[in-house]
Length: 80
Length: 80
Length: 80
Length: 80
Image (cartoon, rainbow over all chains, first blue to last red; front, side, top):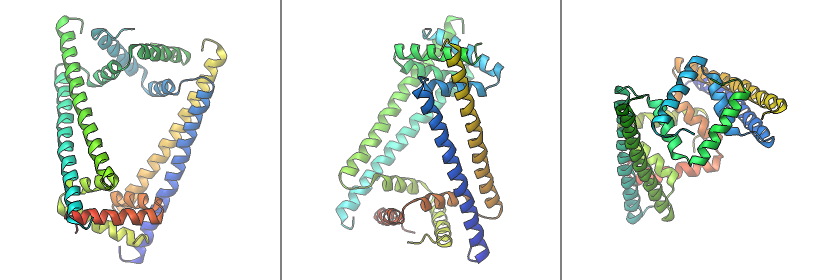
């Protein structure tokens, strides 16, 4: 690290990371804004997040997970 | 911080925190062990975690959340 | 899960987890209280957390980490 | 939510979020790749992360934090 080449390499890596982190933060802010806009039109952000998570799942995996959860809920007296 | 009293006070605070962190880690390990034991008897840890979360909720809040989720799922074509 | 034995087993697992989670929360609250008490006597909680983290490390590992950080800081012009 | 307008609105919000989440994941992957590339050239990713964090701080705040940490380390016998 004492030579100029390494120092310059390290600085370039750090600066690339900083630019990418900034971009990532910008997109995270955009996502927050969409949720806020949806909320202002009467939708519930928390439930929307659950929907996003469920849509990412394979359909069979989701159905199995939901069936198991229903079984456990019935066992513990948590049916609606 | 240069006087002996402050140094000793800081050390005592740090040591109290370390003892509590150790206790907390012990309990976190116990929780993991219970999930492992349940898993070895055929139960699904992930679904159990959902159950623990649902049981913490107020019954009305839980039912409202579930009704809203069902509505959103229907809207997005995610019914079972 | 339809037989009574499994249902009872599941309930017992869930209740054990709930008791342990409550204990864990109690200890986490105790830790917060120690930091608050230390803060009220003039100590800085954030720096205390760094100290707790450093004390957990092996001495050699810590010294290597600190030496490397000093090198990188010098390379990026972050010396004090 | 029973009317077609709301259902369509919800779907559009969800799809906008999904596109943004995908973009965000792409950038997070790019960041991981830069760290891996740096590591393959002999740099230490963990120390690089500390550097990124320190560079984000205001210079005075960073110097105060570092001076306080040195004081606490001396008090606890953690000097190099």
